[in-house]
Image (tube, rainbow, N blue to C red; front, side):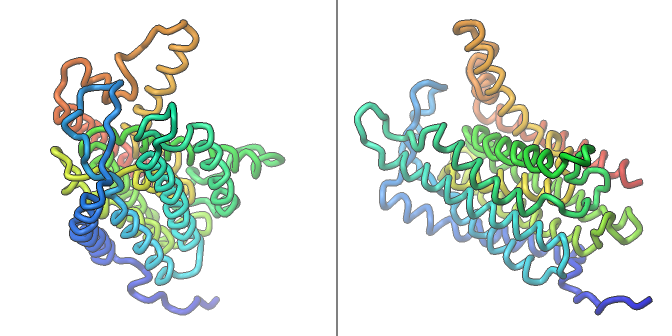
Length: 361
């Protein structure tokens, strides 16, 4: 029995390379965002503050779409990882996740731009594409991306593969479920982006948790993956996740309270798409409610609020949805809300890693 050619050291993604990728993405995003925000401010691309929520009037005019450099860093890291990773499912997952970040980033950019330039009658400035149109675009784009993932070998977390137990129907069920997970995650990150540093900090934690889980999976599995995945496959996906974590951390230095810029839909949607596709492709999607625990709580709070409001004729479960506004309207300061939700996200991430460890041990 012969083995294939040796895998180059860089392609195997040892720990030092994973760390270097994350640090490089953080440095590029941090440094590149300075001139980008200056350019946005010079052209008056400031955020319009909605009047139907907590009082954030002081933030009016803060440059939006400030996370474009983050998205570009994430895409560049994904392309680089795809080029040096050995052929296999890991490279494919990174490619699809990178394409997803680009596609949903473009959708978010269109929404941001529409919101900035909308002056039509009956439509306030700051409101972009209609929810129905945006959902249709998200579903259409997501269907293409999911089609590239269905049938992937089960990922390094074994039974957490993108495979459901209905042999005659599972390709369609896989695709439908994956599409729902993708669109839900994109919108979960998007609705969470409402307070200074909240979505950026939680993205740092979520991608870091996913990357750590994938990085340690081969070691716990005896140096190999499972179901057709090799150790370099798992670490290639880990590299993409850790690069996104580093890029989000670099942006957080600009977006923490008081925010010098907002990430915009271009960034929140790209982050959500990348997170979902990396988890789906690597088989870690059942961990998403913990990896992105606060994101899940935020989107669930919106769904429950809307459903209860409609079925009861105007009654509310929360003071206001998403969840972070409920806490604000209860008298909690913005910084307190953000820090406590960061802690909740970190605790959920620890739980996700613990489950991964228990599954592999």
